[in-house]
Amino acid sequence: MENETREIKKVTKWITSLMAERAWLEEMSMEGWFLKDIRMGIRYTFEKGEPRHMAYDVDRFDLPKNPTRREIEQKADFLDMAEETGWSLVCHDEGQNYYLTKPWEEGAANEFYDSSEDRMRRAEHYKGMFADKLHIFLGLTLLMQVMGILFYLIPDESGVGWFPVFVMGYTAFCMFICIVLFRWSRLYERELRYSLEEWKAIYGKKDSVVRRKFILTIGGLEKYLSEQSAAGYHIKNMRIFRFTFACGEPEDMVYMMDSRHLTNKRRKKAGSSVFKDSRDWEERNNDWQVQSLQEAESAGWEFVGAVESRNILYRAKASSGAVPLNESGGIRITSAFGGMAVMMVIAGLAGGIIGGLVGYFVG
Image (tube, rainbow, N blue to C red; front, top):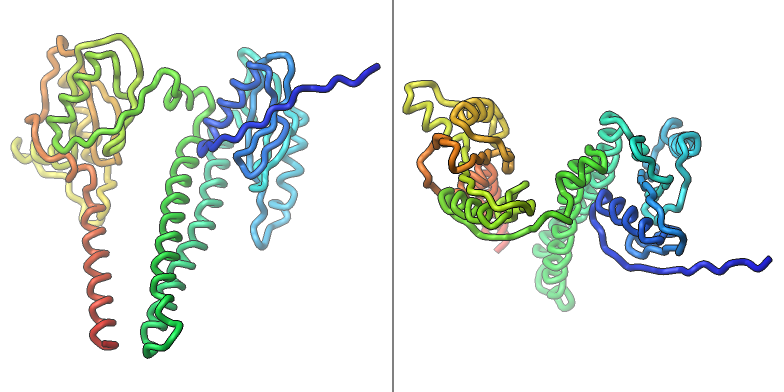
């Protein structure tokens, strides 16, 4: 009997989200391409077969420097449990991410981690991995700064002039990596708490459109979102300048943005005490959000989402008679950054003072 030679396809694809990667691998299986190997996290090898729906899941098993017995045995337990529950190991990449697969079953749990507690533990695991790498690059950045100061103290000699340029370049590179690692840490921690179906409902791309737009005022934002709804694009989630819309039927909608400042403004006008927490430097205390939700829903508004924990976006049908809580105005950028802007100013002043003192005593 002659051996069949199966068709092999290699795809280079950069995917930063594990959930997006899993969804893509499922789509590939339904087209008849089944994962066989991954190199460097971006080079995928697929084998051709009969199209069928396969489920995929991933976990990471990189041991710390001083692993406990439980950590040493964890991977073996993971693979044993996978085999017992119908999952099979496909491969693992250089980052020790282990990929599992099994036939997709209607009405069954198509997740290896099918409880919120298990998914939470995995999310914390990935978050810890990124935190460890972040600490390494922050340490390198600090070391470069110390070395830069030491070389600055050395009298001008031949061969030293290149070093400040090297320090600047190396520091910029390390800070860029730190920002990337921090963003990935937030992404993984947020997304891995969901099941794949929940993730698709929230972040799915097929029925979504992402747009970036600089909008300075609250009134301008509310007007922009209303125009998009009239064109059939309804806001799903947003960042400061990034908006994700769900495609749907055109609707005549109105929007309202609320913040702690605006909530306190209403309370002050009504003669009530304002929300103020002297220990809440980053404006994370959500007492005002509870009050905002109660007032907005009683006035006929529907909750859309919270933005950077400092703003809440509401919407209502234009014909619903929802009563606006605030005047449509104000600068949006201040409420978006909030206390973080204060911390940035303080850090800048501290850096300027330290640099000035070093220059004064050394110069």
